[in-house]
Image 1 (cartoon, rainbow, N blue to C red):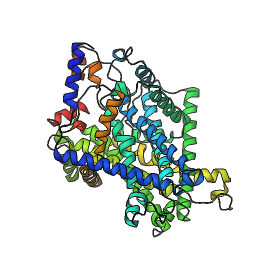
Image 2: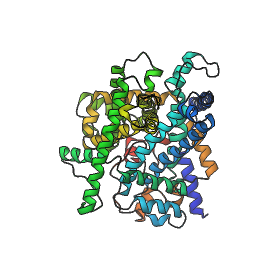
Image 3: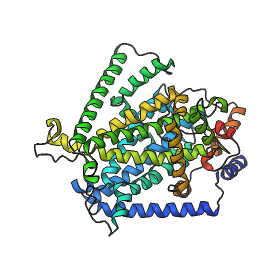
Image 4: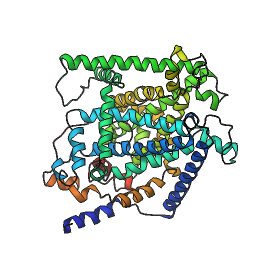
Length: 504
């Protein structure tokens, strides 16, 4: 390593390190303690045979599948942070030192592939979270777990706080903290390449293609053209694309029909977990939770879209101005604080939606929904149709709407309420342990900050080492990413709002 590399490494460590205070240390310790307790209680639940996978297969199968799902989710989330942040960087800078990162970039940054990847990975996130839910969510809330009081079981297992904590910390925030600043190292492996190909295959399957119809409708309404790096579709390509859109609409319609009929008949997990909720209210609550997910997905798009606007243009109503004043006040730490609180709220909503869409119809009893086969009924019981509904109607659609109408999102009073809730959840420090685990992962995997390899964005600009690629017009759910080698507010308080503008 050269003297210049040593200087970059030392400077990177200093600029990214979080300054420890007694309150920060307390939040770290409390969060790690909460994580350990959550893992223990969920593991104990699995070995009572009281989760769907543990019941249908074996407790060890539930445990192993849950671990694998968390590991894959961490790659899905971390890879997004890497691939969204790397396009401005000339791939030749890391072609020789990180050949697998170069392969990821070569595929992801070709044409509109980054948009395709983001579409596919969004469904993968929902699918993996639903798998975790089936592995670790209780079927019968009355079953004893470690002799814990009913109130503790209700909060940590029935509502799902335990699943939320370990999913957010282990499967999302830890990997995002590292991947947002160590993009080049993070995807320099075959696991990342496999995940990229899988996401591309999911998008190619057409399951999510009805989202493109929504994109075209919103483009026509807003007057904003759809940006593409590929020529217009013609002939077979045109027919194949719109054929998949029609197929996706049919799949979405079937998933909605199954879910609505099952809810009204009381044939979902929510009727078992929360028997006091009548079927009609359960249906209303499903769409309420989906709307909350949609608002939070759209808010992150709207917030990043207006981050570079002058303060006078960020909000045009009373609530729009209050939202922007709160979001960008002081040294700007509320923007990343919202992203963390948002993650907790979204994952909580995902698990709740999973309860509303998981069916409890016993195959072979003659009560199969719509008369489907026993095998199809067994599959529907896992609730994966909820992943399709949530991805299209509660995630991607709202992201597209926020991209087309960001100011309208800011002016919505619900936006301000959800921002306050998200900031409160971040303040509680439930997921502060992610920073501890991120440092541990960095040490074990020997990750280096991006500027060690490629310098900061300013240095690359001075040396004319940036790539002139315009890729990735759909930001996708989850973490939005940063410029490779930049310093941002996820590391702690920053000096000014201008620093957010430079990092966003």
